[in-house]
Length: 145
Image (cartoon, rainbow, N blue to C red):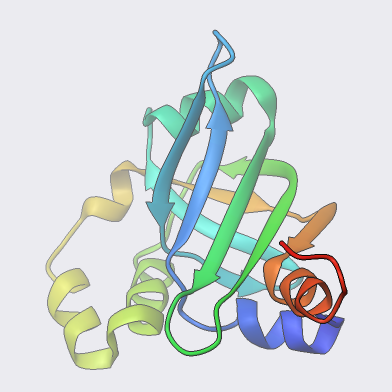
């Protein structure tokens, strides 16, 4: 997958799975919503959640986005994660709008103060893996998968 195709893919409202590692080396993977902005994935989570605690210790995570309908493909980004101590109601509204549309996002966010108990995770990719390009190259090779 070239950079333009990857940029278009990560800009879509894909459900992603963020993977972190706990203090005992065990993997922790959970679905999240994200916004792709300025070359980074912006994700919100509850302050004190497992992913928040793990990232506080390791400073890193992987994020896998996949498309299961139509042409199957996925992109995984791995890299450092910074933690922001505040999440604005406006950002939370933008995130929900990206996934469920304006009307439903307002219904979910307008009367809520949940953002006050959240932190912002910003994953800046250092490494990319994509399934779509690998699969197409492998499919056309004489080696059977």
